Image (cartoon, rainbow, N blue to C red):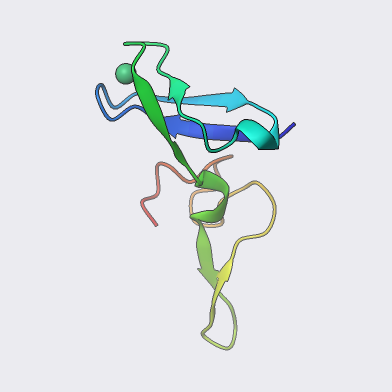
Length: 76
Ligand SMILES: [Zn+2]
Protein backbone atom coordinates (compact mmCIF):
# COMPACT_ATOMS: atom_id res chain seq x y z
CA UNK A 1 0.00 0.00 0.00
CA UNK A 2 1.24 3.51 -0.72
CA UNK A 3 2.29 5.96 1.95
CA UNK A 4 0.37 9.22 2.04
CA UNK A 5 1.49 12.35 3.79
CA UNK A 6 -0.89 14.56 5.69
CA UNK A 7 -0.65 18.03 7.16
CA UNK A 8 -2.94 19.06 9.96
CA UNK A 9 -4.35 22.51 9.27
CA UNK A 10 -5.08 22.97 12.94
CA UNK A 11 -1.71 22.32 14.56
CA UNK A 12 0.56 22.17 11.47
CA UNK A 13 1.88 18.75 12.33
CA UNK A 14 2.86 16.42 9.51
CA UNK A 15 2.45 12.70 9.56
CA UNK A 16 2.44 9.79 7.17
CA UNK A 17 -0.06 7.02 6.88
CA UNK A 18 -0.07 3.81 4.91
CA UNK A 19 -3.47 3.39 3.40
CA UNK A 20 -5.15 1.54 0.57
CA UNK A 21 -5.60 3.64 -2.56
CA UNK A 22 -9.36 3.49 -2.10
CA UNK A 23 -9.02 5.48 1.14
CA UNK A 24 -6.49 7.99 -0.17
CA UNK A 25 -8.90 10.89 -0.52
CA UNK A 26 -10.36 10.49 2.93
CA UNK A 27 -9.04 12.79 5.64
CA UNK A 28 -6.88 11.20 8.29
CA UNK A 29 -7.08 12.07 11.96
CA UNK A 30 -4.17 14.10 13.26
CA UNK A 31 -2.18 12.13 15.85
CA UNK A 32 -1.61 15.33 17.83
CA UNK A 33 -5.02 16.96 18.01
CA UNK A 34 -7.28 14.29 16.44
CA UNK A 35 -8.70 16.69 13.89
CA UNK A 36 -8.95 15.82 10.22
CA UNK A 37 -5.73 16.51 8.34
CA UNK A 38 -5.38 17.24 4.65
CA UNK A 39 -3.41 14.99 2.36
CA UNK A 40 -0.39 16.48 0.63
CA UNK A 41 1.31 15.04 -2.44
CA UNK A 42 4.87 15.21 -1.21
CA UNK A 43 6.19 12.74 -3.76
CA UNK A 44 5.04 14.88 -6.65
CA UNK A 45 5.93 18.31 -5.32
CA UNK A 46 9.62 18.08 -6.17
CA UNK A 47 10.76 19.30 -9.55
CA UNK A 48 14.08 19.64 -11.26
CA UNK A 49 15.23 21.36 -14.42
CA UNK A 50 16.72 19.19 -17.13
CA UNK A 51 19.20 20.16 -19.85
CA UNK A 52 16.54 21.64 -22.12
CA UNK A 53 15.24 23.92 -19.39
CA UNK A 54 12.06 21.95 -18.93
CA UNK A 55 10.67 21.42 -15.49
CA UNK A 56 10.49 17.73 -14.77
CA UNK A 57 9.45 15.72 -11.78
CA UNK A 58 12.28 14.23 -9.79
CA UNK A 59 12.32 10.49 -10.16
CA UNK A 60 12.46 8.19 -7.19
CA UNK A 61 11.90 9.10 -3.59
CA UNK A 62 14.75 11.54 -3.01
CA UNK A 63 14.64 15.27 -3.66
CA UNK A 64 17.46 16.46 -5.90
CA UNK A 65 17.89 19.77 -4.16
CA UNK A 66 18.07 18.64 -0.57
CA UNK A 67 18.73 14.89 -0.97
CA UNK A 68 16.23 14.20 1.75
CA UNK A 69 13.77 11.38 1.49
CA UNK A 70 11.06 13.98 1.17
CA UNK A 71 11.25 17.54 -0.07
CA UNK A 72 9.36 19.22 2.74
CA UNK A 73 12.43 21.11 3.87
CA UNK A 74 13.64 22.56 0.59
CA UNK A 75 10.49 24.57 -0.27
CA UNK A 76 10.85 23.86 -3.96
ZN1 LIG B 1 -3.36 18.52 14.48
